[in-house]
Image (tube, rainbow, N blue to C red):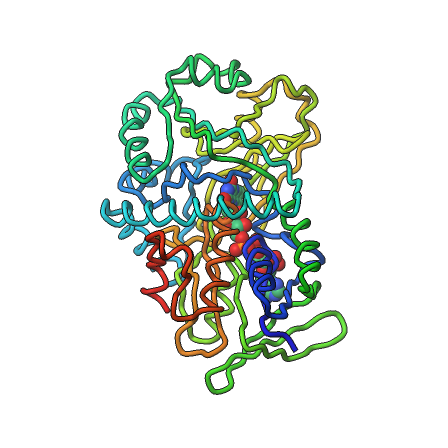
Length: 428
Ligand SMILES: Cc1cc2nc3c(=O)[nH]c(=O)nc-3n(C[C@H](O)[C@H](O)[C@H](O)COP(=O)(O)OP(=O)(O)OC[C@H]3O[C@@H](n4cnc5c(N)ncnc54)[C@H](O)[C@@H]3O)c2cc1C
């Protein structure tokens, strides 16, 4: 018998299990794969980007998205479907683009992200984790003069929220990351945040699984959650593996199923605003380290990020609102490869590239759902971290664990710092 069962072993589930188990309860984690972080947390952009946490829903976004609608290799693609969930998500996303909503969301995201980064640093040094972490900051570079003109204003706004985002001219960009030399003539300028980091989320989850085991967490892999059943005000989970099917009850069941959280909860009549925003990445072996970046980069024009993960370069980005599918069409990978070749032509021969796709569990505001699900005594949710699940993961796990341990507080530690967990007020 477990005190708490965490559904999903992505970066959110692993962090949730860790903090819960550390605070006392006997915890189990259930996942359909044979190890943690095999879905959205597998090969993401790697950025811990507290100071680059602008939500997708911002006042400039609708016009930008309209321009991209007819562009085949656009960073954001929308495939309309007969799906109310998709259309209502889109309508709510437009609402979140209004300036006052965007400002509020940005403040909340930065607070949760900064809190999360602080905890991630503590956890990493306490358990001596080694996940190709780079503490060299994030450099955001711009190649479009019109967009570049507006950057100092956004940077000032981020500074108002406590981020140290420096505006750099072209020479300073190249001095910060000399590997950008091949595209020096395209760059207008950039912003740099020294405190931001990068690292391999998949590696982190594998190591945290061992840490969790050491604090008593049991992992049940190759276990598919096929159904949730209600019994009075409780839920029970139906789990199927190769040979058996069983029903499981625990006083706390925490849903951390990424994009699939929405599907599971819909079976209970609970409609969340989590919709899959599909993204792609490429992992490229670095044969010539001098030609590869060490600072994690964001290429504004192409909406791509580059992170150095040991002997590899990860390039990630693009978003598609096209429902639940995991195919990897070559035409979506091609722009990532071409841009990597343009920016860093000498890192290697680009022959052994590993393409990947993942579904970001996106909410219209980019704020996650962290809290207890209304109407049920044992059901909790930690999901919907969208573009920033790696950045917000450690803090979200702690917040949820604090809320479970002290339900009246709704997450003491972070609330005392002014975080309102606004989403939980709205939906739980
Ligand atoms: C291309 C791309 C780039 C990104 N770059 C960054 C970045 O640079 N920085 C950043 O902070 N974030 C980034 N993200 C976002 C981040 O990766 C996600 O927000 C995060 O991984 C979500 O974690 P999760 O645990 O909620 O979901 P997941 O990692 O998807 O975990 C959900 C788990 O639930 C399990 N599961 C689902 N359904 C079932 C079921 N029925 N039965 C059993 N198990 C089930 C899955 O197997 C999975 O392990 C990026 C995402 C993408 C796609």
